[in-house]
Image 1: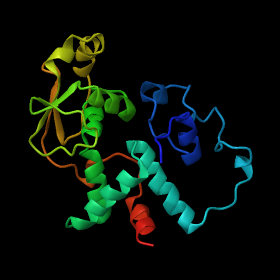
Image 2 (image 1 turned 135 degrees about the vertical axis):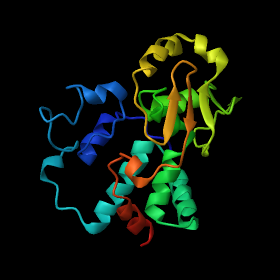
Image 3 (image 1 turned 90 degrees about the vertical axis):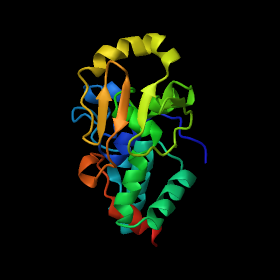
Length: 210
C-alpha cells in the first residue's frame, strides 16, 4: 500500500477529532475540524451514515493511530507484533514504540511542526543520534541518546530561524531540550500518562486479536 498523499484535513474530519497533521494550521480557525466549519465527515453520504459496528470502531482506532504517526499498515503491524513480544501491556508497549521512533522524537522536541515534516528532516539527513547522522524515520531511539541537528544543517535558513523558537518550546517530561545547542536527550521511556495522543489502544489490541 502506498503512502497517503491526499488532503490530510479530510482524515481529521473522518475521525472527528484533530490529529494535528498540518502543524500550526491545526491551531487556527482554518482547521477542518473547527466547530464553525463542516461538523460531519467527508463524502457524499457522510451526513447519513449508520451506527458503527464494534469491528468498525476497532478499525477506525487503528487507522487513526496509523495516520497520527504517519505509518503504513505493514510497518504498523510489525510494531504491534514487537509490542506483543515485550513484557507488560501490549497497548502501552505499542504506544511507547511509536513515541520512541526517531521522526516522532524530532517532532516532540519541536524541530518540526508536524510528524510529516519531521520525517522529511530525518530522510534529508538533517538529524543526528549521538552525533551520527541517521536518515531512517522508523529508527527506534533509546534512553540516554542525544538527538540533534546536524552541524552542517544549522546554517540552513529553516534552522537559524528555529533556534529562537525552541527557547520558548515546552517538551514532554521524558525529554530534555537544549535550545542553544539544538539537541535533545531522551531521559526515560514515555509512560502512558506522558503520551497525549487521543488513542484508545485497547481497541487496536482487540482489532489485531480477532
